[in-house]
Image 1 (tube, helix red, strand yellow):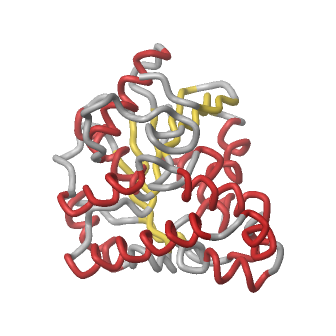
Image 2: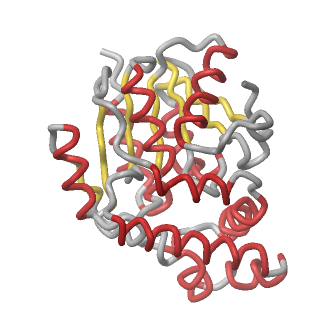
Length: 259
């Protein structure tokens, strides 16, 4: 499947997968750090960013989105890449590892390790963020993003250090959230999400210490599922790329070491 993407660098191929309502630009804080030693391909999932939607009649589920990423890699001629994802993208990375079609997978705060109340909280927060993104005119989005208080109110549940967010990036992310045609159906499908099958490729799971959307206690369940310790990203929230780009890049590079 054809998807919108940004490609930089040289080396072992590394696919980056964003979370629900986001776009490939969410990886910009770490992109050049990764591209120094990897052939980095950051994608917009179907129905998000500027990628086309899934084919008519195909339900928006994490598994269907994983199918699309797998098809996209085949179209590019990229075989068994390393893959890293955040949130929904983290689940997709683990799903691809369970299929044995990637070399390694890194999942940053992946979905799917929640209790029912935690799932309900996640869906409620995301629905609220989506409603706000769709109702606020661009001028008000820009005004809010231009102040430290505005960034804290807009993004405080998703990032631990909203003051580090670029106002331009925050407005772009808000517009991507509000305009994503695949959002509602994908979010609804979360109710059926369970941890993937056991991985057939090496995986690394890392969790934001201050993740308020998927609290870090979910990392304990992820550790039990994977049979290994989950890395804790200190000082980071649910979207750690802007909180600590250097730490996130290091986690991904260590996990995707081609040696």
